[in-house]
Each structure stands twice: as structure tokens, then as C-alpha cells.
Length: 438
Image (cartoon, rainbow, N blue to C red; front, side, top):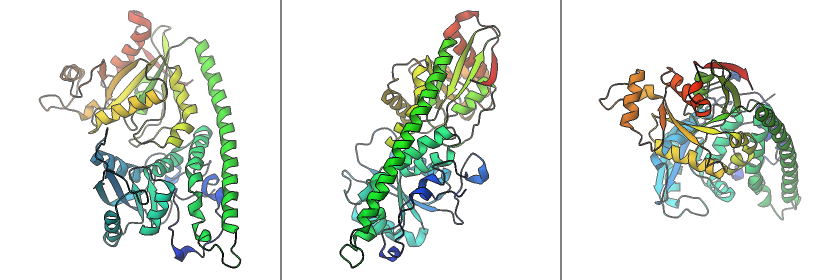
């Protein structure tokens, strides 16, 4: 089965007017990564690579509106570059602008737009990616001016999720988000026919086809929501069965690429997929972790969070994120080596509050301590070093915090014991892990 190209829209150029075939709705989303189509990277998971013969050359654009909260513009642009790399592109240039008010037509000012046009000769970019969400009309105007594909962060993240989707549940949720993102942008697909309005033989077909596409996608959205509702009901039954076992539930949450899946593997001994990549895990995974006696709890890993996640994606993945609502304890996994660690922590907390679980007890775990240093500049290498790190509190943590390295195993046993103690007190003995899926 062939794959669809990355989410994109053709430049609004009169040179393309000859390409007046109706919008291929099925090929765009149902015959590729929006469904169960062939995966990138030879079917292997990990950093994906472009499916075309030529790698996309991306030019990044960011705007600082002066009252920026959370992640700085520089860090956000670095993150955007990592997203482009994950999607299979290469960053060839970038440009930022400080602007109190966005331009309603092109988001950036006309002067910056001219600079981006001029930069094409030197960088040979084939794609322009904006760090913030663009309205459908802004995207259309920008493509008309730049004569290349223009994506915003939302479209880029949707494309990565589509490449990462491995199960039917994830595929359904990603496809729903893609369709909801596309629906308000359909008019741009038929802009060239609307410009021909009144010409002999062209009266009406553009609007007719536009309405047809809207109806097709609207029908598909309704069908997807119905299928996802069925998945939600199935997950509810699974949760009910687990609740009957009366086992506590611990859920791993955190910013994407904080090492949640690696920690799940280290704690449970299960062969859980983990990779140094954003959004490596989309589907929830649950494993049983027990002590040397009868005490045990369930550990669940879910999709990681990120700033500026598309609203369509958060909405579509609510069925998956429902798993977090049944958790007795959330383990917030923090990347101790991240430059924007404070902004990442805030993003996770805001997301939890948006999901209605901001009041669930949280245990903070700083991961990747093998990449951190002690106050004297020496690397963290032993369990004793963890105590020094905890006392130094380099991240300014205000609540109970444990330090671990999921890759080297530092602090993992102590974390496992701490989790068992949370629910069973001092009576637990040497813990054991079970790799059996729950």
C-alpha cells in the first residue's frame, strides 16, 4: 500500500491551474499514514525519513510577541528543528521576528516575508515551517507568496504522529485529528477554480466539488468518532477488569522524549519500545510490577506531552489519555538534561489540568542523571552521587523528587521500592518485575 506525502498543500500558483483534478480525499488520508498504510524508515520505528526521492529542505519561522510565557523562542525553534528532523526533513535556515501583533493575512510582516523569499536562492528550501498555528487563510496567502509548501507546527506534529501510529487505535485517533485539521483548509484546494468563476464551462464546479469534499470528510469524521467511541468503551471494560483486581495504578507522564518508555522498561523488565526520539510511544502500555510477596501495582505509560500540541490531536487522543484518570499516582518523568526543563514541567502540569487530573498525587522523577553533573563538576556515576544531587537540588524542585537513569539503572531499584512503599508500606521485600502485558 502506498503512503501519502506529508501533510501539505500545493502552492497557490497559476502555473498549477492545469492540475484541476478533484481533491483525492481517499489518497490523502485513507491510503497512507492516516490509516494502516506502509510505515516510513523501512517499517522500522524511530527517526523517520522522507518518502520521496528528495529530502525536504525546511526553513523555520518563529515570532516573539513580547509577552511570551513558558519556553523561550530560541528553545522553541530548536524544538521545531527536532520535529522537522523527526519528520524526515533537514533544516536549512531560520528566521525570527519580534512582533506585538500578528499580521492577519500572512502572520509575519511584509518585510520579513520578502526576506524569506530572498533566502530561497541561498538555502534552496522546499518547505517553510512556522512555529505557531496558522489560520487556513494565512497558510493560503503564505503559499501564494512563497511558492512552496507552508506548514505550521500543528501540521508537522500531526505528520509525525501519523508516521508513529502502529495500532488501529492510534491510527484512528491520528486520522481523526488530520481530518479535523484539514476540513477548514479545503477551500484553498479549490482556489484556482474559484478564480475562474464566470468563465465558459467553469460555472459552479469549484464550489460543487468543495461541498462534496466537505461532505466526504464530514462523513469520515463521524465514522471515525464512532469507531473511537467503541475503542473507548473497550478500554473502559479493561479498566473495570483491572479495578476488580484491586491493584493500584501508577501512570508515567512527562514531556516527550523525557525517557518514560525507557523507565517503564527499566522498572518492569518488559520489552517496551523506547527510542531517543519525540513521540516514540503513542499507545498506552500497562505492566504489572510486584514485590517478592503478593504486593503489586500496575504501571502505565502513555503518549508524551509537548507545548503547542494541536487541539485536534489532544481531542482525538482523549480516549487514550483516559487511562490517566484511573491512576492512583502519577509519576512525572523529567529530563534532567533539558535546557528548557522549567517550561517542560509547566507544559506537563498545564496539560494534566486541562485533562481534569491536576489534583492527582504526583511523584517527580528526574531521569537521565547520567548526563548531569554534581556541584563539583564531576559526573553522576553512583548511588551515593544521587544523594548529593538530591541535596544540591539543581532543578529547584519543591516537592519530593527521585533521581534515576533509566539507561544505566542508577536509582531504578530505589524508585521501584518507593512506589511499592506508597501503597503497601514497610512490609514489601525485594521487588520483582513482570513483563506480561495487562
